[in-house]
Structures are given as structure tokens and as C-alpha cells.
Length: 396
Image (cartoon, rainbow, N blue to C red; front, side, top):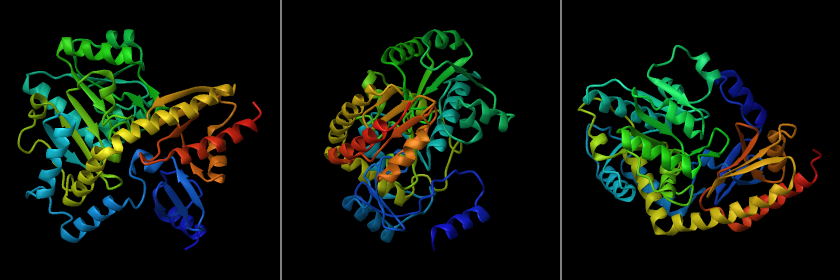
């Protein structure tokens, strides 16, 4: 099937919710993707921070194929050895004793919201959840409500009640909104979809301390920043804090759909039998994939990701010499370059694709770089060389 037939089929049958690039991908190898015409692209999107081992990683592929031949899914009516093995490894690695496994980041965040509400109810109170403007926590009605996109709010109103927002990285506004009705705060340490915008160390440390002093739950969305993306297993580790709840997905199973909500013992036992559930969540195939991902991270990839992330940051810092680049942000292997609005980031994305590099554009005219953790220095050098050539030939 050629590209036109593929595009026609989508136009005819798929609900019109995606704006896709004119690119049909066929296979992957290492950190590269190949289209149906055999063109090669170094991947700095990684399925949106998901394919953290790249493509056709031998240990990962062998583990997944072996599990497919053995057992894929039986539902959570029954125990499986691989799920038991994985949750033990995950809880020990993360330091959180309780976990719920699901299928996506939105589901993990939905679980966190429900868990917080159960916790409040168990203490005889109805509480509000405070979230940051510019955040992105998912596309279900509840997670959309805690996502700082007012246009989407208006389109899907009426939305669930019990949520309010504060200004991104503004501690004074945070304190003003942390009123007696607030029971939990939910945020990302780096707003990935919001333009790769990190919260400052001072904000996170002070916000966490204030919540702890008031008995308010602190929930961190690690969906995009977790699993080694920032050079530590979870991004909150950089700030010396320990949330009550974290959520994760994307890279957790290396490309197989999976998510998780992790919590402290006190909060994680707020659910009662039947309060939450999932048919597919944590099935044998997903757990085998996630278990192998975590094993590979623990066997040296995490340290390597920290080193290569620092290298990448240093390479991108040199682009501050161009006057149309407003900001260079991020940490580890989640980085963003914000361009002046008179220089469309989408045009840069297209030119990089022509040179054999895949990146994507996120909110605020920002080029986002979220490659596999296996990305090499040579591949980073190639990207930055191509980007430098584009910048040098841009009139702004």
C-alpha cells in the first residue's frame, strides 16, 4: 500500500483527531526509524518519550517474544508470576510500597485522582485538587480538567468539579490558592506538552514543604519525566522530595501500553475492594516488557542516560547564539528549544526531517527532543549539526 492509499484510508475511516506528518513508518532498528521508501530517520521523538530502548533491542525483544509464546493476558481475576515479579522490582526500585497497574498515563492520573478522593473521604472530607496552569495530565474528562488548556475545557464542558489551578512556577499564587479546601496538589516537574517548562528547584522544594506542613497530598506526574528520562529513575529525585503519589506510563514498558500509579502505604491503602480496576492493566505481556525495561535501566542504562543527557544539554546550549531562539530548557533527555514566534518551529521540524531527524513541536513554538535513552553521542552530534545548519540559514 502506498502513502496515498494509507492516507485515504485514514481520511475515510479514522475519527479526525490527529494531525499526522506525511510520513509512513515501516520498521525501526536501534535509535532509527525507516519509512516505506527506505529512508532512514534518527528518532528524537521516541513515540513521545515511550520507546526508551529504541527499536529491536535484543534483550527486550527476546523477553517480549518469549512472553507472547507463554501467556499474554488472563485478567486480574487471577495471579501471574510475572506481575508479582514486576511489582516487587518496581516498588523496591521506586521506594513506594503500593502500586496499581493500568494502560496509559491518563489512566494512571485518573487513578491518582480517585485515590486522593478516596483518601479524603476516608478522613471524612471532600477536598479540592490544585493543579498548575499549562499542565497536561491526560484526555479523560477528569484528567482533562486538571490539564491547563482552557480551550479544551470549554469544548468538553461541563467538566467534573473539585479542581482549581495556580499559575505555573509562581509560588505566591500557589500559596494564595492553597486554601483549606485543598487536599492534594498535582503537577509535573517539567511540563512536557506545555513546552518543556521545568518548575524551579525553589518552587518545588517550597511547595512540597508547605504541603507537608498542612497535611496536603503531593502528587507528581512522572509520565513523561520518569523511567530515566532526566538521568534519575524519577525526576522528583533531583529535588530531594518524596511525593505521596506518583504516576508513570510512556517508557515504563518500552512501547507496550502500560501505566502505573505508585503511592505511600498510608495513601495507597485508601482504596477498598472494588474501588478501582482494569481489565488489561498489568497483564502478563505488559509486565514482562516493563520488568525487562527496569532490569536494563538498573544494569547501567540509567547511569548512561544521565551522562548522555548532560552531553545533549551542553550541545544545545550553544544555540543561544541565535537571536531568534528565546529559550533552551529541560533536563537530561527531555529538552526544548523555544523559537521566536516569527520563526515557526514547525518549519524547523520539517527541515530536520528532510535531513533525517525526527523531532516534534509542542506548545509555545517549542522544538521538543525526547529520544530513546540509548541515543548515542554521534547521533546527537548529527542532530545538532543539522540544526545548526538550519539556524545559520534562517533570516530572522
